[in-house]
Amino acid sequence: MRVCFQLQVRPDRLDEYVRRHAAVPPEMLQAIVDAGRRDYSLFLRDDGLLIGTYETDDDEAARRALAEDPRTRAWEAEMADFFVALDGRPDQGAPRLREVFNLEEQAAAAGLAESREPAETGRPA
Image 1 (cartoon, rainbow, N blue to C red):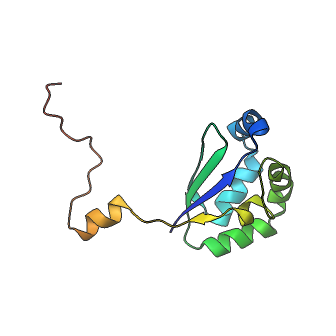
Image 2 (cartoon, rainbow, N blue to C red):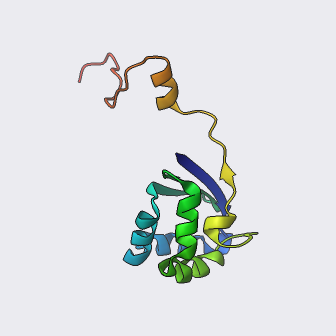
Protein backbone atom coordinates (compact mmCIF):
# COMPACT_ATOMS: atom_id res chain seq x y z
CA MET A 1 0.00 0.00 0.00
CA ARG A 2 1.07 3.58 -0.65
CA VAL A 3 0.74 6.14 2.13
CA CYS A 4 0.82 9.92 1.78
CA PHE A 5 0.82 12.30 4.72
CA GLN A 6 1.01 16.02 5.37
CA LEU A 7 2.67 18.14 8.04
CA GLN A 8 3.53 21.81 8.40
CA VAL A 9 7.14 22.68 9.22
CA ARG A 10 7.64 25.87 11.22
CA PRO A 11 8.78 28.62 8.83
CA ASP A 12 11.67 29.64 11.10
CA ARG A 13 12.99 26.04 11.13
CA LEU A 14 12.88 25.20 7.39
CA ASP A 15 16.62 25.43 6.73
CA GLU A 16 17.46 23.37 9.78
CA TYR A 17 14.83 20.77 8.86
CA VAL A 18 16.38 20.39 5.41
CA ARG A 19 19.89 20.13 6.90
CA ARG A 20 18.80 17.46 9.37
CA HIS A 21 17.30 15.38 6.56
CA ALA A 22 20.36 15.68 4.33
CA ALA A 23 22.07 13.04 6.50
CA VAL A 24 19.59 11.09 8.63
CA PRO A 25 21.45 8.91 11.17
CA PRO A 26 22.01 5.37 9.85
CA GLU A 27 20.26 3.82 12.86
CA MET A 28 17.10 5.82 12.06
CA LEU A 29 17.26 4.78 8.42
CA GLN A 30 17.61 1.15 9.50
CA ALA A 31 14.67 1.47 11.89
CA ILE A 32 12.47 2.72 9.02
CA VAL A 33 13.59 -0.16 6.80
CA ASP A 34 13.12 -2.68 9.62
CA ALA A 35 9.58 -1.36 10.22
CA GLY A 36 8.70 -2.27 6.64
CA ARG A 37 8.59 1.11 4.94
CA ARG A 38 10.12 1.53 1.51
CA ASP A 39 10.27 4.10 -1.27
CA TYR A 40 9.99 6.81 1.42
CA SER A 41 10.24 10.43 0.25
CA LEU A 42 9.61 13.85 1.76
CA PHE A 43 8.70 16.91 -0.31
CA LEU A 44 8.92 20.40 1.22
CA ARG A 45 7.30 23.54 -0.14
CA ASP A 46 8.88 26.94 0.57
CA ASP A 47 6.06 27.83 2.98
CA GLY A 48 6.74 24.71 5.07
CA LEU A 49 4.09 22.38 3.70
CA LEU A 50 5.62 18.90 3.96
CA ILE A 51 4.25 15.96 2.00
CA GLY A 52 5.59 12.49 2.68
CA THR A 53 5.03 9.28 0.78
CA TYR A 54 6.08 5.69 1.34
CA GLU A 55 5.04 2.16 0.58
CA THR A 56 4.44 -0.59 3.12
CA ASP A 57 2.64 -3.90 3.34
CA ASP A 58 1.00 -3.04 6.68
CA ASP A 59 0.98 0.60 7.79
CA GLU A 60 -0.38 -0.09 11.27
CA ALA A 61 2.35 -2.67 11.91
CA ALA A 62 5.00 -0.26 10.61
CA ARG A 63 3.70 2.52 12.86
CA ARG A 64 3.70 0.20 15.89
CA ALA A 65 7.20 -1.03 15.08
CA LEU A 66 8.53 2.53 14.91
CA ALA A 67 6.71 3.51 18.11
CA GLU A 68 8.30 0.60 19.96
CA ASP A 69 11.79 0.90 18.45
CA PRO A 70 14.26 2.65 20.79
CA ARG A 71 16.26 3.87 17.77
CA THR A 72 13.41 6.18 16.77
CA ARG A 73 12.62 7.82 20.12
CA ALA A 74 15.38 10.46 20.21
CA TRP A 75 15.01 11.35 16.51
CA GLU A 76 11.23 11.72 16.70
CA ALA A 77 11.44 13.74 19.92
CA GLU A 78 13.89 16.13 18.25
CA MET A 79 11.81 16.35 15.07
CA ALA A 80 8.51 17.07 16.88
CA ASP A 81 9.61 20.67 17.59
CA PHE A 82 9.88 21.37 13.86
CA PHE A 83 6.14 21.04 13.25
CA VAL A 84 3.19 23.39 13.68
CA ALA A 85 0.17 22.02 15.57
CA LEU A 86 1.43 18.47 15.84
CA ASP A 87 -0.48 16.24 18.22
CA GLY A 88 1.91 13.51 19.34
CA ARG A 89 4.80 11.94 17.48
CA PRO A 90 5.38 13.01 13.86
CA ASP A 91 4.86 9.43 12.67
CA GLN A 92 1.53 9.12 14.47
CA GLY A 93 0.18 12.68 14.33
CA ALA A 94 0.54 13.36 10.60
CA PRO A 95 -2.81 13.40 8.79
CA ARG A 96 -2.96 10.78 6.03
CA LEU A 97 -4.11 11.89 2.58
CA ARG A 98 -6.51 9.76 0.54
CA GLU A 99 -5.24 8.59 -2.83
CA VAL A 100 -7.79 9.48 -5.52
CA PHE A 101 -5.81 8.64 -8.67
CA ASN A 102 -3.06 6.20 -9.50
CA LEU A 103 -1.82 5.99 -13.09
CA GLU A 104 -0.37 2.48 -12.86
CA GLU A 105 -3.55 0.99 -11.37
CA GLN A 106 -5.87 2.63 -13.88
CA ALA A 107 -3.62 1.85 -16.84
CA ALA A 108 -3.44 -1.81 -15.77
CA ALA A 109 -7.23 -1.95 -15.30
CA ALA A 110 -7.66 -0.49 -18.80
CA GLY A 111 -5.30 -3.12 -20.24
CA LEU A 112 -2.66 -0.58 -21.20
CA ALA A 113 0.96 -1.63 -21.30
CA GLU A 114 3.21 -0.03 -18.71
CA SER A 115 6.06 1.91 -20.26
CA ARG A 116 9.08 3.36 -18.49
CA GLU A 117 10.40 4.95 -21.69
CA PRO A 118 9.74 8.64 -22.44
CA ALA A 119 6.97 9.21 -24.94
CA GLU A 120 7.93 9.75 -28.57
CA THR A 121 7.86 13.44 -29.40
CA GLY A 122 7.92 13.06 -33.17
CA ARG A 123 11.03 15.22 -33.29
CA PRO A 124 14.37 13.93 -34.58
CA ALA A 125 16.93 13.17 -31.90
